[in-house]
Image (cartoon, rainbow, N blue to C red; front, side, top):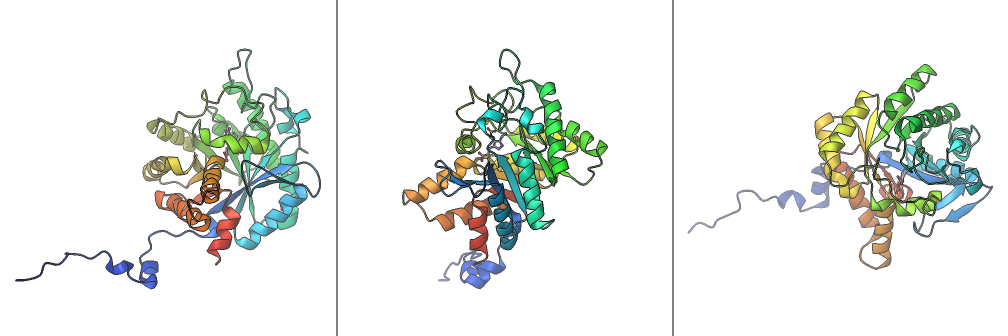
Length: 331
Ligand code: PBG
C-alpha cells in the first residue's frame, strides 16, 4: 500500500528562522512609524497622562528632545497635538490662528533642533482650542457648522504652514475642507506642503484618552456623530477617500486603526494611493491594560499589531508605541 502524503507541505518553509525570514511577505521598520506627541506650556515639563500609561505631555523644549530621539531611532515623522491652556480656549477657537500658539512654537523648536531631518505633521481641527471641545464652530442649536468652520480651519492650516509644518492633516471631517486648504496653500506659495487627510475618521469610542491628553474630554458635550463617520459604514469611507483625493490630498488616513483594517484594505485596493492608519489612544490603552493584567507580552503585542497594519496595506502607522517599537526593531 502506498502511503498518502500531503500534496504540499506549507510547514516546510516555516521550519527554520532563516526560511521564515526569506518568505516573509511584509516588513515593519521604524521608517513606517509616525509618533504622536502632546505639547504643553512651560519649561522642562513632563506631565504623565494617566489614561495613556507611558505617554506624557511635554513642554516645547521636551518636544525638541523627543524629535532628536526620533531622528536617532529612524522615525521619519512626528504628529503634534497641543494641550491649550483653559483660558486660551474660546467658542471660536481663535487660539488656533495665533502664530505663537503652542503648536507653532513646537514646530519651530523641532525645526531648530533637527532641521529637515524629520517631518512634522500637524492636526487641523478646532477641538484643542474650543471651549466646547467640538472640532468646529457651533450654531445656536449646538450644530457644528460646516462652511464657517472651514474658514477657520484654512486659517489654522496657513498658520501651521507658516510655522514650518510639512504635512497638514485635517481631522475635522468637514465637507470640502481639503480643497479649501489646498487652494489656500497654493495661493500662499506652499506648493510642497503635503495634505494627509483624515479621510475615513469614525465617531469612535476609542478616542477617550486622547481627549484627556488635549484636555477636551471634560469640555465636550454630546458626541461628534454629525461629522465623524458611523462605524457601521464602509462604502461611505470610499466616497470620503474619493472626495479628499479629488480635492488634492496627497495621502489618506483611516482612523481608528485595528478595528478598521477592512477599510484600509478596501481603500488601498480601490485607489492605490498611500494609506495611513492611526492606532488611536484607546487602542494603545487597551494593549497596555492587557499587559498590566498579565494577558500578553507588550513587545509581541506591539510588533504584531503594527505588522497587521502593514499587511492590510498601510504605508505607515501613527502610534504612541512608535519609540518603543523602533527600539525593538533596532534589536
Ligand atoms: C481631533 C482628533 C482626535 C484624535 C485625533 N485628532 C479626537 C477626536 O476626534 O475626538 C484622536 C486620536 C487618538 O485617540 O489617539 N480632531
